[in-house]
Length: 481
Image 1 (cartoon, rainbow, N blue to C red):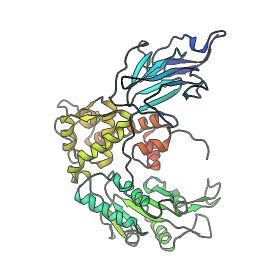
Image 2: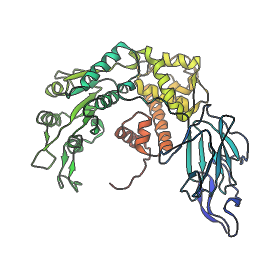
Image 3: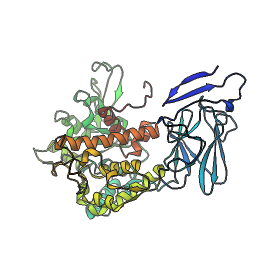
Image 4: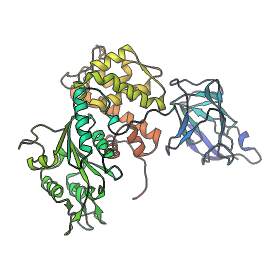
């Protein structure tokens, strides 16, 4: 009698063979997760060409390098080259071997089968981006490592306005003064803040980021300055705020323009005295952190009409870095897209743009700036094979007619018969959020952890978590802190 462990993704998985039958000899009837007939042999659909250099375990993010001159036995047996602690994996489950310059996986008579991109196979080629599933374990095939950009190298582009801003930020990194970064959403304000930190004398200290626009008003004081036990309902213990957490490093206050005016005098005093008083406390705590702030609400800054108090603005704007929007530097589009394709190519395989896709990129105004461009490239890489076409870049909702003042797109991307089912503003917002949600869900599935998923999309962990909650994306559970 077989012991049924469960049904996962449309597949029935077993953890024990019937009595007297060898582990690898167990036969089972199973359907691929897409419901199509079982494929016992033959090549799988290729998502992209390129050399596979490693496998990444999707849940843990652990990478397994593959040497070209050897074969690998995969299973849960102690003598396997790739040993998996998975009860649904056979002792010898499958074999990875090089043939003709490419990696192939061959099933070894496993009881639960070997799957490539959710289709059961007997033998199939591995290409970058394919997902090898054995039991409950998902292994993503990766290409060779790409260039890792650090510091200010992550700010790609040759536009004179951008290079001036980068040069100013680079010079500020050599000092300990406060920096205020201005720019529209998606222009790379946090990337600049991280680069300043990484190239400063505080690089070995923590980089603590706080999105001031994502905190409930009643909790802002606690997040900034900490609180003592019993200070308010739910304060079951003492907690230090971000100023003290960042001691020895850098504190990045993102979206500072969203901070209520009532809290700004407390922030100003902390910056001037270098001490904070926790909510409900009577004493003050010292901190030693460099403060970098950013806002996209630059209208009237430095005047009474601005989102920041005048005195707070002048205290923070010792160095003022203004990042240009992407529409103001169209000459950087090709270089940015090339950098994104290089970055994503390791996990998805190489891609190239069709002439139509290049034209669509040039004609779009990119209201979401570099962040929107990266998400468009990620979406295109996900849904294409070798050639990226214009329709791969934009969600369906964005190809409906919309007000050019909100999010104009290039000619040829709007079907003439598209029904105006949504108002222009709602169509634009729905399309953008659908694209972001798809990218975030895929990142979580591929990387498993919140931090790795956020890093892969170029987001701060806190920003990723805030957006995930707002978009209804379930986050990995890590237990009680």
